[in-house]
Amino acid sequence: MGSRIVILGGGTGGTLAANRLRRVVGDDVAVVVVDHDNSHVYQPGLLFVPFGLTHLDEIVRPRQHQFHRGIEFHQAAVDHVDLGAQQVLLEDGIALDYDVLVVATGATLLPEETEGLTGRGWMEKMFTFYTPPGAVALHDALAWFDEGRLVVGVVDLPIKCPVAPLEFCFLADWYFRQRGIRDRIELTYVTPLDGAFTTRVAAATLAGLLREKGVELVTEFNTGEVDGPGGRLISYDDREVGFDLAVMVPLHGGAPYVGRSPGLGDELNFVPTDEHTLQARSWPNVFVIGDAANVPTSKAGSVTHFEGEVLVENVRRFLAGEPLDRTFDGHSNCFIETGFSKALLIDFNYDTEPLPGHFPTSVGLPLLKESRLNHLGKLMFQWFYWHSLLPGRDIPGIGSAMPEHGKHREPAPL
Ligand SMILES: Cc1cc2nc3c(=O)[nH]c(=O)nc-3n(C[C@H](O)[C@H](O)[C@H](O)COP(=O)(O)OP(=O)(O)OC[C@H]3O[C@@H](n4cnc5c(N)ncnc54)[C@H](O)[C@@H]3O)c2cc1C
Image (cartoon, rainbow, N blue to C red):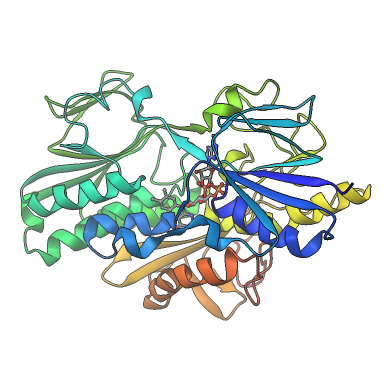
């Protein structure tokens, strides 16, 4: 009897891994994907929904249609994994045995973990654009919002696409200017970080852009409580930021079933993972892709895509009894929409922070600099997502490893 690879989660990582594996492993290896629903959301599109720049029906497609022939899709929620028995228990009562398990269940939003956030005012004056219903509700709220203080708040890290809340600020500035009411709106960005971003050079560039667009930056603010009726974010050290409309990025954790699977996850339900091989630290026949892993890079679709190459090669090597490929470098690449049909691009990995220059070589898209070309890149990316990334194809000229050429490094200190 042949082997069976079970992939938990049919989002970005699960889909691209399944499609790549189907091509790489022989016909005697079964590839099974489990997901609890049948709607695949292009999540980067959620940023544009509140501003009326796209609609849900343009960014959601049936999940089962994204899989190549020969892949089995099972629609059910995972209840837990029994690592010792090499078995996944589903909520519909079915047990799936596996030879290799790929964890691709992403990150889960935990708004109820912040006191008051889902209490009075939730989805009335406090929203998140990180879910489809939240993005749609926020669209309606923005349409009537014509005066007051709009606060964009990140509760804690890690979050999916750490630049998305900044993009929201830039687009909000654009949106209210288009409506001719920008002077009546105060925009504030609240972050637990000590700057606009995690790394030095990008933080300076992004803080400069916030300043230019008149967005106040509040740093080192760890939101402990949200007072909906009073319109206040309250930090653990008792500072307060008032709001009329709050756009929150809630706490993230791994999928709850991870916590019900002894040995699989950490205290946040993310899966401890070797950052270079993508093998789980718990068990050799478990591999992890995308936001579910605790690797020290961004939780982003681009990372998930770059991981795909190494992960699939390592599943093949594992089944063949060969030593694993240790080359995943944490490569992350992200367009940052800045409004007025412009965007920045950042490209980095575990060792190299986002730097200025060009991508993917010394001629190409400008890095850490606003341009229309980057904005077109951001818009075109959706096409690549459905037609290249999910089917498991490589993007020409862009490999898994971060390109070194084109980046302007500062001279080393003497
Ligand atoms: C607003 C927003 C903007 C973003 N913008 C960008 C961007 O510009 N660029 C970028 O690179 N990335 C961006 N991202 C991040 C990107 O979408 C994610 O990093 C990427 O989708 C991660 O892929 P994944 O496979 O790990 O998780 P997902 O694609 O989220 O897939 C996880 C899957 O697991 C399933 N699942 C979870 N629990 C269970 C269970 N118990 N049983 C069965 N199935 C389960 C879910 O239904 C889901 O289909 C953005 C994200 C958001 C929210």
